[in-house]
Length: 372
Image (cartoon, rainbow, N blue to C red; front, side, top):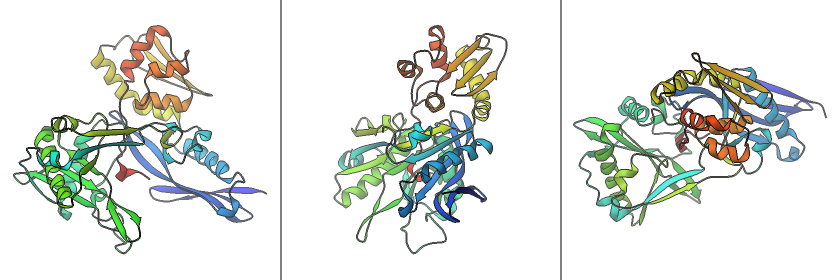
């Protein structure tokens, strides 16, 4: 059957659909987002709402839809693409895991109540949006995987136009002399029957208030949990969060899940655009690590694409990887040492240490609030 691709542009997104016999049979939405990659911002196509009509499943329409979507992103200036995928499907279209599937800590409520938190804690108010956004930006200034937010991201409602079928978002704040220095945020999730449950809390703290801000919020949340007779308090937390140092003296359980071909996955959409976005960040890393003058150019080769970043005089550094694995390296999800086990010829032996310095392994993370 003859099919066609329909693209509908919106303000901050676009819809891509496959039509057969004049009717849409599969569709998705590309959300236009900015994501941190170290100190750089890259434009990503965030893939959401992938659907195929039930009677048309198993006929290749989703495959055609995804291929058209990748082409659209490449042709329209997206640097990369991120999605949260079902198992064993999206790797067929060049996506690979680039962030953990889960990263939480669980604290005994009694232990949380023992923290020496002395700051005042209260419910957030509608006028707190600017301060909340400032805390978020300060706490995530170079965390790869985090998205650009707006004040509206901290609205009490997921959808301000619909207060019928939703529960309010919970936001509590810690303040010092009237200044907001930390927040804890949780979205409700529907369980079953008429029961809502709060997801694990996201906590953001100004760097200079890591100790008192974290302790005050956790202590207040633990007291609430104890009043509900909950034994544990669950907090969403990246694996390298500085907040862990505050919690370590009272103890916690940490759970990090890395998925195979599902969950938070990514691929490069436009290699030239992505490398251009990273140029200033890489130049800064070279200066701070003493590599300035030792690398004059970085050449990236992946699949049929090739791009380069030129700096000053010096030898060229060549990296050859499939595009999805190159993105894993750039985001710090996998180190060059790990990738060389799978792709031994991806870099020359003598430059492994240099590549590791320029693209250090880390803990890319996107808060659940920003999932799509």
